[in-house]
Amino acid sequence: MYALQTSYGTLSGISSSMTYGDGSLKSCIFNAKNCIKTPVGDIVPQYRAAEFGERQKKHRSSLSFYEGGQLKSASLDVAMPLQTPLGVYKAEFVTFYPDGAVKRIFPLNGQIDGFWSEQMEGELAEVLDFDLPVGKFSAKIISLSFYPGGELKSITLWPGQRIMIDTPVGTLPVRTGFSLYEDGSVRSVEPARVVELPTPIGLIKAFDPEMIGMNAEQNSVQFTPEGLLCSVKTVNTGIRVFTASGE
View (cartoon, rainbow, N blue to C red):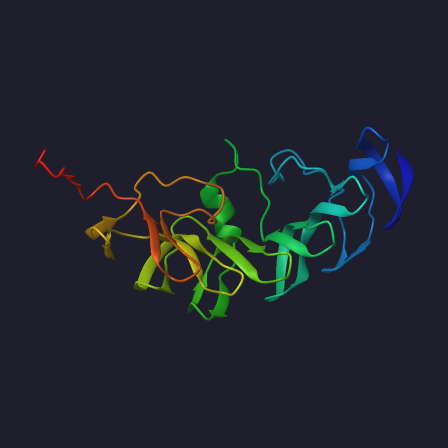
């Protein structure tokens, strides 16, 4: 074990670390307790390894840093209350922008594998309440994402969660999650079922049965900043295009 001096104080009990080309600290793993002051509050980075058979955390460094020495991410030893622009939420993993603003928080950070299933991880997730301009709902979430200025960027839901969101084309049932523009208007949503939407070429039944992705920032129904429908995915509606000659 060894210690390193950083802008966040002396980090002790380091078992391994990585550096950038200039020698500055890129990431480190602890096996001793450290308390770090951050913009979201005092945190204790992960330092205890799980025993055999226990729930494992995802294989991430305890702390990672930008090249300038600013904190980039922190994997927490236990879920801790973090101060976000939306309020205080408990989380096991948090990432930051270079200026220290919170970028994304993850309430849970368990490793999904043959010994720990998604269902088992999901059973640990708490139902959180949200009261937003686009809707009021309660749901289990995978992550909250924020813009550098603190505005909510997206909410990613746990599989199986369903909520209702107000959009420019009406209130829609949503799974996976949704994303917003910085002014709070809806940028994209992932419909929870087939929904018929009006488009410039007629009604389109929107749905993506093969939806995959790690976050809800790019969804199959998207809107412009002005609230116009600009993109939709469908497997339920066919489109025929005819030329002037009728072909």
